[in-house]
Length: 283
Ligand code: FAD
Image 1: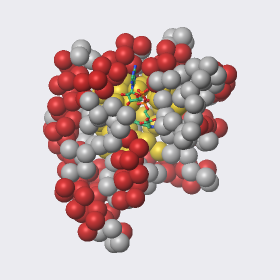
Image 2: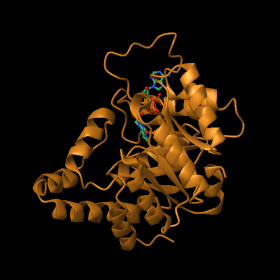
Image 3: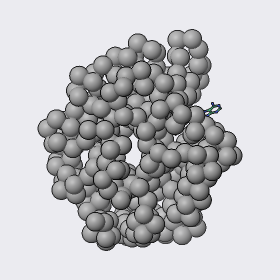
C-alpha cells in the first residue's frame, strides 16, 4: 500500500522510525512490540554512505512481508553512484517495498561531488525514483531550518522543488517547539505545498544523541528541554521521565491541532513509545 493513502482515511496517522542495529535479532522483538500500537507505517533509517544498506532492505522487507506493517525505507543519494542507487531500488522492489524516503544524506567529510555521483540533492533522487510509477515517495522537511540553509523561505522553496519533483508526503526533522511547526505549516500553504506533513517527534532521553543531531541538522532547543537535559544528564531514569513527559505534552498539543501525522523517532526503544502513547489520547 502507498503510505500517502493512509492520510485519506485518518485524521492523524501514527508511525515510527527505527534504525538497523548491529545485531538484527534485537530488532524483531522491537517490531513485534511496536506492532501492538497499530502503526500506519514504520520507517527504517539508512546509514550515510550506505553502511547499513542491506540491513535497511532486510528489515523493511521483514516489516512488510512478515509483520504485515507498511514499511518506509530511507535511502540517501549524495555519496552514491547511479549504479548503486539502481541496485538498491531493485532490491527494495524485489522485497515488495513501495514506499521510499528520498534523502540526500549528510555529505561525508572531504567528499567531492562529481560526475560519478549524479544526485546532488534529494530532489535528484526523487526525480530518479519517480521514473517508476509504482513507488510512493516521502521527503524530509525542516520546520526550523537546516544547518546548510538557515533562511526558512529558501528552505521552503527547496522543499517545493522536492514536492514538484514528485514527493507525495513530507516527514519533519525532530523539533521541540510546536509553535515553530505551526508557523512552518503556514509557510507551506503560502508556497502552495499541499502534501501531507508528518511531524517528527524524538523524546529527549539521550542528551548526547540530541546534541549530535542538532549539530548535523539544526533545530531549536528550547530552554526547558536544555534545562532538564542538563539537570538529569547523569540520571538516566529521571532524564527518561522528563523526556517522555515533554514528548507526551508535545504530541497532545499536535493532536489537538489535528496534524496529519505523528512520527516517533523510537531509537528502537519500544518501552519509551509505550510510555508516551499511554499518556496521550491518540484515537
Ligand atoms: P536536501 O533536500 O537535498 O537538502 C540538503 C540541503 O541543501 C538543505 O540545506 C537544503 O535547504 C539545500 N538545498 C536543497 N535544494 C537546493 C538547491 N536547489 N540549491 C541550493 N540548496 C539546496 N540521514 C541519513 O544518512 N540516513 C537516514 O536514514 C536519514 N533519515 C532522515 C529522516 C528524516 C525524517 C530527516 C528529516 C532527516 C534524515 N536524515 C537521514 C538526515 C538527512 O540526510 C540530512 O539532514 C541531510 O543533510 C539533508 O537531507 P535532505 O534529504 O533533506 O536533503
